[in-house]
Length: 133
Image (tube, rainbow, N blue to C red; front, side, top):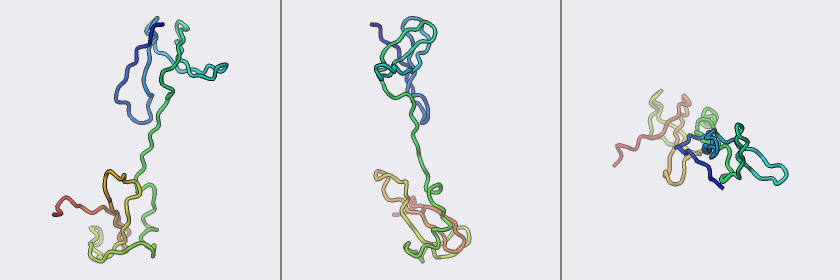
């Protein structure tokens, strides 16, 4: 049996897993279900060539969330259970009190990332640690 050519590139999230081409006519192969055997096959719509799919992934949708989308920072600022810092200054209103919390979407490999939310104007920011030392 002749194998298929696979063109693979650095596919962005939410894109096809890879493209396969027909070994008979070089047209694109499309994923199709073999309902009798409950398997995934690659099917050419031009010459009717079929072959089993090597990769069972047809579509990849990688989700990434940002903290701003997860939390309503206006509500968080009035949360009495969050720790408060009195030694930070809000760049928006120059108030010196803010609540802070761990970034809910930061990965362990990125280290600890904090979000500060001003208790006066509800402006939120991440501290600039580039000048620390």
